[in-house]
Image 1 (cartoon, one colour):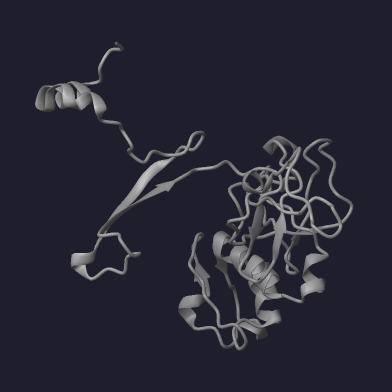
Image 2 (cartoon, rainbow, N blue to C red):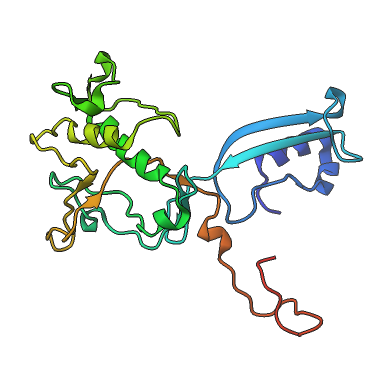
Length: 248
């Protein structure tokens, strides 16, 4: 007879030899799955919870997984600008700004005119201004409507603007040209929101300035690990006798 677990020894002590007929049918996490329990909820018919027929009590355990991002995972911004990761590079191979700061994500420029969601460009420019801080000197024409307290701001500000009647193009360009210099005394981005980027692999500057800024990016629930699928034999179509598509 195998070594008994503490739980089995307790059952044997209480019920004697009858405990031999007891089987452990506890619900466990499926094989290969892992995670961290982030919540437990108990539903009961006595508490007027809606339960399936024949069920008096239901316990639901929420298990969260942390997954590293990988090629093929889907990301999206807040303007319908979604896409799939094509390649993940080491940080030292990514393009970098003149002060050595590497960019985190490179987006294809064709995604802007195709979907006509110019909000992502506005967010990028505003994000850069808010992150850098600004100092408006004198009284330029584009800043006549700005209150005095908004003419100067330290880095890492929280800025919001209405969607349609918010910051105008000339105001954005003016703010970009008034951003505070970095620790080396350089202003990274010019009035049109672009900066010279350097190739991380060769160290050479790219031939044209590139739009750089800060944008909010989310990971969608379309992960390549859940979508990968292969089969040897399986169901076939009744009519064409071809394999049925899909993972299920």
